[in-house]
Amino acid sequence: MDHTKHTPLTPAELTPATLEGASIYGADDHKVGKVSHIHGAGTAALVVIDVGGFLGIGAKPVAVGIDQLQFMRDEDGDVHAVTGWTKDQLKDMPEHKD
Image (cartoon, rainbow, N blue to C red; front, top):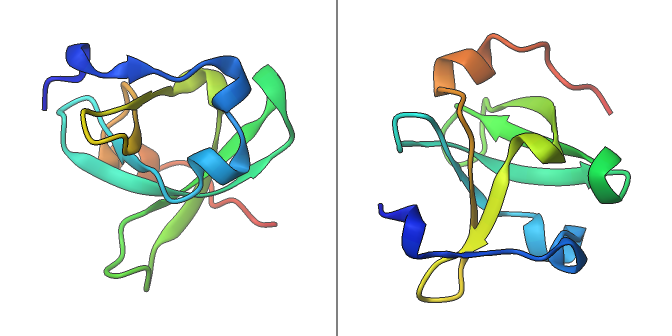
């Protein structure tokens, strides 16, 4: 997927309503997870990503700083994010517990 043609989200758009459910693409441009929920607000917010599993079953939640993800909209208006991590790197992170 060519993310260079996608529109970055503005800081005002970085809300739970906009980000929850967004797909996350890793360093190798493969889907690595999905946004489960957001803790906090603004640049200090944590994004909880469900990594692995199948249809949401067996996924491991990990938390990363919102500043570690580049959120954008594709040509269809769907929100997704890009990160420099691979799926294996995210799986190796500590499990996030609410």
